[in-house]
Amino acid sequence: MASVQLSAGPRVLSPAAAAAAKLEGLRLAAPRGRRGYRGLVLRAATVVSPKYTSIKPLGDRVLVKIKTSDDKTVGGILLPTSVQSKPQGGEVVAVGEGRSMGSSSIEISVPVGAQVVYSKYAGTELEFNDSDHLILKEDDIIGILDTDNVKDLKPLNDRVLIKVAEAEEKTKGGLLLTQATKEKPSIGTVIAVGPGPLVEDGSRKPLSITPGNTVMYSKYAGSEFKGEDGEYIVLRVSDVMAVLS
Image (cartoon, rainbow, N blue to C red):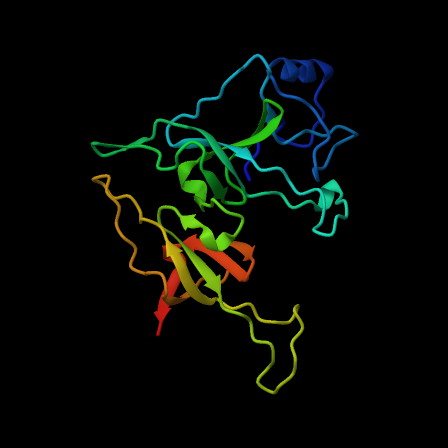
């Protein structure tokens, strides 16, 4: 995820610079997992001063209120901050006016109030009204997810949702494979597809693959998710290499 950097390199802010940063709404704090220099550490997120009461994204950008991290395991064990899984989803709270493509004006397709999932390293994080938010481009939103099960994800643009084929449990010689030694497959079944990419006249070009297709995809592409009934991956259609039959 992109972050706002308060310094260009490993240097310590002077007291005057630190005070100026605070006046502009930027706050120094101890971040999670970030390295400090000589006892000084900088928080990755921009903190919006309380004097500002609203944020209006511009162009094709979207403001998302990030879901809170789980601070306990399913069994109720309290997790330290360092091992809490960072969410990749949240609620859309504001959208920009859209963008122009040729002579056409394209509005943001994601409505305010939608629950969305976004790319892991997308956007700029900020703190507003004591909550974590993210400003990102609409194209960085993977899909809309109204439930807690990834199989219900509705992909956006040129993305596809694939259920990953299960890895082989044994070698050809019959040896049982451990979880660590199982070869991760790059084959799966298409569960859902997006409406397609935008073309010059503002319309969308339908994707060439359809739900139910068995496909082979690039090994290191996409964003992976664990569902109730197995593993899923969301990737762009350009990362799908072939349809198998």
